[in-house]
Length: 122
Image 1 (cartoon, rainbow, N blue to C red):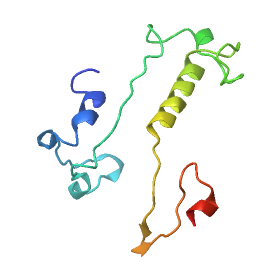
Image 2 (cartoon, one colour; image 1 turned 135 degrees about the horizontal axis):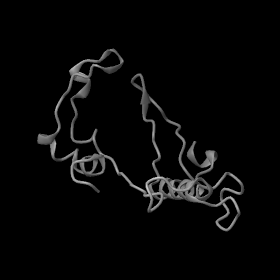
Image 3 (cartoon, rainbow, N blue to C red; image 1 turned 30 degrees about the vertical axis):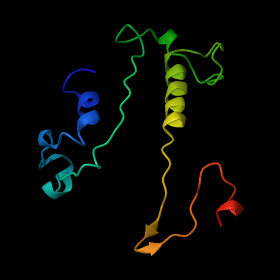
Image 4 (cartoon, one colour; image 1 turned 90 degrees about the horizontal axis):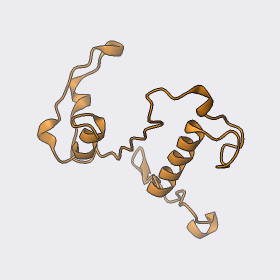
């Protein structure tokens, strides 16, 4: 990571709160500074920076296509299909599952649980 860029900041943003400031954005008609007040759990992020190529702009014929996207040795393989496969693998490793416990103060008793049949949850 490059010091001070998103990869660096997002890693420590939740515990180095003295470096986090409220702001008053002016783009998109702006919004209130209160919407940029964060606590120790709102700025947690894992950032994976993937360099597509040694060159800043790889040759078009090295980008690949959607032909047999998940087959490593296909004629469509290239930078883009490889990075799609990498991104999907990272999502699978991190397992970003969500549990909904209530909606409008109504407790949910049935939720989607990964890798479990519905009858086992009810």
